[in-house]
Length: 145
Length: 145
DNA sequence: ATTATACCCTACTATTTTTGTCAACATTCA
DNA sequence: TGAATGTTGACAAAAATAGTAGGGTATAAT
Ligand code: FES
Ligand code: FES
Image (cartoon, rainbow over the protein chains, first blue to last red):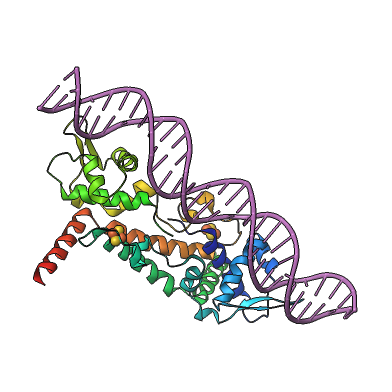
């Protein structure tokens, strides 16, 4: 039950952009380098995020990408769902078409629903702003010691 | 982020065996038929569950499989972890070897940890007994209507 | 205008994981 | 014995993932 690299790389990239929020467009190669990802591959992910309205882009020299909204208005759920689709342990809790063919109600489905709901609760409650705050906290703690 | 068929089929099979708990060994082909799964494939899953000590087997004619412990002592987590390994969105929250190479603390890792923990909480809190009870509840409601 | 930079788009491929299949063998019961 | 069942390991088809490749388009600096 791993996330694919799409979701993992995507969240990293979005976090990186959140760090630079308000500082104008950031070129993709700098993101790719900082997070050690293939620029070509990252392009694909970023294109998806842009279409979803989570990113804006500026073309031309000195261009790049920037968050389309403030970090506090973008959740981890927004990002992961854009890149991975709904996060759930089985298709049947997303689309009724995939329900199993048992006549009586399916008991395992209740389990999948509870897993899905608990994941949703987590990813919808964390924003990029929260991640920035966490990062700050870590730095602060390090300074104290 | 789907579970593979291993976990999904495996939980179904274990639930089925829980329904027959105390009634002696159940042959695999009856399980496969009731849940509409390939018997050959199910064999592999069941072998894994047996090695983990969740099932007992009886060879020979009139043989079959049975839960090694009462339904209230087997959790969904026991079953899914046996068949799928730890349930987590990224390898780095399971094995430090896979941590990304950033010097500073990784912020996305905190997100993966929260997802992992919330999944763990759900799967460790549901036993096969709970599933049997749920099933009963559904039947009762149906009778009422 | 030219050039460099950077986004945009589509198609393709290598790899890995998943999802089984199959055959030969061992054990038990009637 | 013979039929029913579990045990094991090798193999293979299919699907998903991860990444490459390369051409095209828009913009800005010069
Ligand atoms: S409806 Fe999803 S497993 Fe039955
Ligand atoms: S340590 Fe897991 S993503 Fe960085």
